Length: 311
Ligand code: FDA
Image: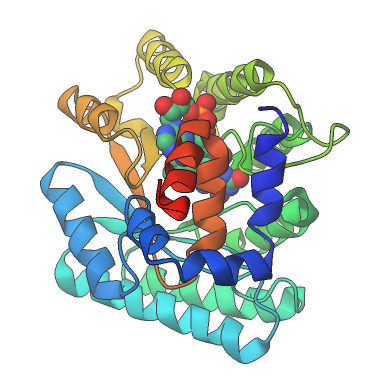
């Protein structure tokens, strides 16, 4: 099974396979488990339902690795529209963006102008933008753009992947700079050994380390905020126990999970009084996101193959 994850992640970047998979009706149906819909209205309806269940949302307009400027600008336009629609609907929900969807592959300045426009619009709407973290090819440039945005705006945060060897250094530096607003996750991309820890247990330990660093008194003194993004109960229980020992109020950090994954755990945390935010993706470009979700759990793949072969 150890080769399965990298294989599926490489499939997520394969356009030929994408054409086959996205046109298979049965897979489209299956994708609904992880994707709220292809249209913004469907995503907002899903967010309002989550709000009714006591959860917050973060909306992701699916798309990545956009190579032409009009398309990157159009993605920023969609986020502006989404922020306006969220406000009109009274939804408790921010947005998550991927910088390669906003033009990072074209150039830093194109991307910066697009993401700045989204952050500015969110700021005017009293809302917040989270910058997702993509593969390690983009980490340094993503953090540089985050730092640049933070010189002007405080309604923006970034994602840190515990699997990357560099992450603890990044987290400590950003905390020291007073701009530690993090979503902490394990990391969804396949990375080489010299860049990332490979063993599952080690990545879990590293994620717990980051949680501890971000919730420690000196980090809090620097206004650090941690969103613990994991469905792993070892991580969630570690964060809960550490926060309890530190006497952190339950609204001073949050748990985040993906739409459609471990719903019962999401509801349980809400019932226990924790702040829970669900990542709600929508749009037509769901294939790479969907493949990464398959890669995370072999059982999903069995389900997928059965559906695809009509078994
Ligand atoms: P782990 O993979 O060990 O899963 C723990 C348990 O959760 C599994 O045993 C299973 O029960 C359940 N589970 C997890 N994934 C599942 C799936 N796909 N289907 C069904 N069950 C599943 N990554 C990244 O690189 N950049 C980013 O910006 C983000 N953003 C992000 C936002 C949010 C809100 C979340 C929750 C996650 C991300 N991720 C991410 C993804 C993250 O890096 C990681 O790949 C997944 O969360 C899976 O790791 P877990 O911590 O959940 O543990």
